[in-house]
Amino acid sequence: MPRLPLALALALLAGLPIVRADDESSFATVPDASWERLEPLKEIGYNLANFDFSAQSCRITCGVPPAGAFSIYGIGALPRANLLAPTEFVDAVASVDILSWQVPQPGLLDGSFPGVFTRIQPETGFGKTDGFLLALQTLQGGLGRIRIYLASNEALLQLSQSPTFTLDPTRVYRLVLASRGDRHTGRIFDLTDPGTPVASITVQNFNLASTPGRCGFGVAMPHPLPIDVTFDNFLAWDGTPPPLAIRQGTAPDTIELLSDTRRSMASALETTTDPSDPAAWQPATPLSTTESGPTLIRVFPLTAPRSFFRGKSL
Image 1 (spheres, helix red, strand yellow):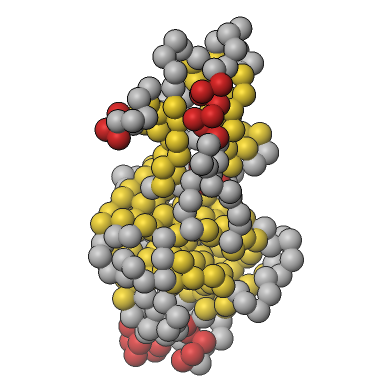
Image 2 (cartoon, rainbow, N blue to C red):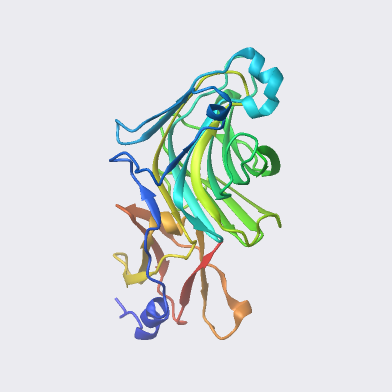
């Protein structure tokens, strides 16, 4: 097996950032008071939401306000509950796993809307919340799609949506929302295949483009029905791509790139044989992708030209 060129190893490792977790919880313990439980309906007298961390996850349940509340308060009275992490970011990535959700009842288009947030502004609450939301819309027939919304005074403006895809209730899905300047990219992953998103959408929106805000997650319901959704493994950080490590592949004439799986889900891997030419960087397509614990392993052929790799923020 040919030896790995030293220049290739140095190209991968030099100048790469140190990864640190900013706001992270596996909910093995109850989040402390710096994590805000945002319940807009509570401000108008409806204390309906509950956050349950007893199973080392975050199960959010929410009852239904009286029918009169919908005619009085309109869309603001839709039952929902959210958990906001403490740190404020301008450029940010937030991700969360969805363990369970509600499918639509007969005769209704959709069920629960679990989602993840970026740039939530300090002034939060009933009729006041601003920020960005990536939501999973659960649909009839075992289908779903993702949508990116701008929340302005709590009213949701849809910016983009993906085509529909199949949702398997026996699997765990991860929502990833990356906000960088005026660009917002949403992805959803089936964790049985962490190297390839099920769906991905990107939009440009100039609202809050340089404004810091908090990240978080939560759930809404577009119908007067109760909510019961379970989340796990929340992570928010500044969006810096993960450092790359390299080793010889187990298959002949291959190399393996190793990176942090969760942060890799919010970045693009690029390659070139001429790093002096900014236009020469192209998406890197691995021969195969596997996961080992928190590490994503991507296998590439070891060809004659020296290759350079880099992670790029979405």
